Image (cartoon, rainbow, N blue to C red; front, top):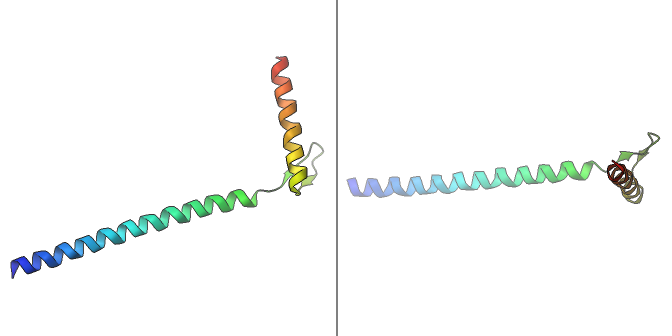
Length: 77
């Protein structure tokens, strides 16, 4: 009787461990998805004059100008 009870508890503990692993995997994937969603939603920036740029080409051009100016300033110093 005691051996059967021990086997039952071992099975229960194993299933609980699996459930905890599944929960941690779900939490991890939810966090990753949330982080990716935040990055996707930030697709607009402002130009030098304060106008909001929302098109991908305009945003890339703005970053290109920004880094060019930043690097040129850094090289002069």
